[in-house]
Length: 228
Ligand code: ADP
Ligand code: ADP
Image (cartoon, rainbow, N blue to C red):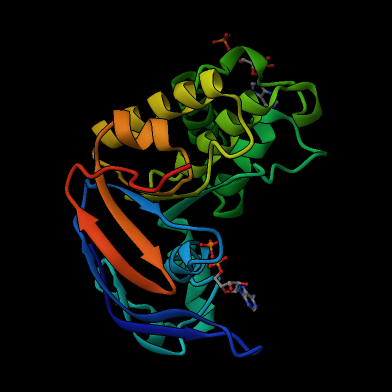
């Protein structure tokens, strides 16, 4: 479903964050992306939803070549990809329900469909009872649950998460992982950048390590693999 061929990314300041990346990811995979800070993990992830463009190389997602994708088609691409961030990025003036419904309102989905689907994903993340609360009234773990609900409300085939447990305590992190496992079990591809050694070494999945803009390891059911 995802293929990167000789992907190279040089930022305007001269930093090379991807230095010839080649990778294939199948539909339904769960992939951890590990590596030191500054290695290029976020850049790798951002290029998949066209937050950043490669300087050269090809990125093909579900048959669409992102390098050739017109700017006018980017919103359409983004609707097929759910994105979850370390800092949640919820809209503070909207309540939980509205934060999740937003993506469906933008595409003018029928109100009855929106209501059913939003309550369905809030139930999946265990927050149906907090639909009327605002982000500031929720714990970090609950905010991340809302953000996961928002990421899947469009039923994307791919969910990308950049250090989703980075701001959460260990127990909450495991709860969040259980939700990602559930989403993956239903067939959604998950790509997750993480520094969480315990999780990577316990819930085994494919691991790719990025260092200096290059993939240095790619193991099915791999380990986190860094000390300290
Ligand atoms: P990681 O997610 O592994 O910490 P990043 O992809 O964020 O790595 O960064 C890789 C390298 O690219 C770092 O040296 C970083 O400073 C640089 N970088 C990231 N984003 C930008 C940007 N927008 N402009 C310039 N340099 C950037
Ligand atoms: P239940 O199945 O428990 O009756 P509901 O579907 O009635 O759940 O809604 C659960 C919560 O979501 C309630 O607090 C409800 O007011 C809230 N809610 C439902 N629809 C909306 C909406 N359009 N905007 C804001 N909150 C909503």
